[in-house]
Image (spheres, rainbow, N blue to C red):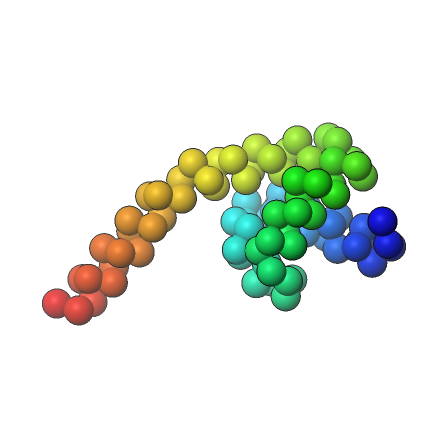
Length: 83
């Protein structure tokens, strides 16, 4: 793995752990696609640091479990503004 990719993986990992950010939020902050963030966290990070990978997995799993709630709230806000 190239050095700049390792650096990016560890930076994104640190950001997600500090802020409990979603994949989309992290992608926006680092200027990469959400697919890149997902691949970095699920495939590349475990080869660099298994312990950090497990911590990030817990955050991503939690965010995924709440995804439907955030989507419902966004829809509710959208239709309240239209009325």
